[in-house]
Image 1 (cartoon, rainbow, N blue to C red):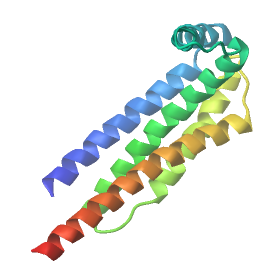
Image 2: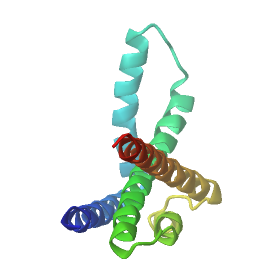
Image 3: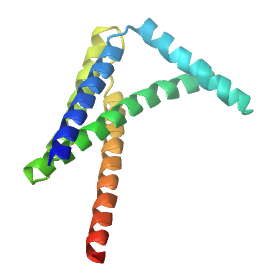
Length: 158
């Protein structure tokens, strides 16, 4: 029981930190955001060119920006799913509302926040963010499924 309680607080802390990170990135203006993704783009281009590829920098820049959003929200999905799983174990029920609604609310707020910093607010970005969160939540669901299957197999063997 204590492990679930401790893990619940660890996941809650990770959720708070992830949301703070997401919102802090949204507070950057267009120029600052472009500079940040430009640094990542340079590193990715360097690696790809070292491997013999020569991608279009404009297309790659777009991909890097979208991959960053997807990854941030995948982490939020993992942490929300982990929190809900441990909370459900403490309350002996399934808690799916939080990991399904929190990332959507954060995605909407994130895009609206970007609108105030001179960046665009796009429904497609909200959908991409939410897809990242669902991907992360899917990872948690698969891990829980595997864990439960192993526990049942071990219980059956004894």
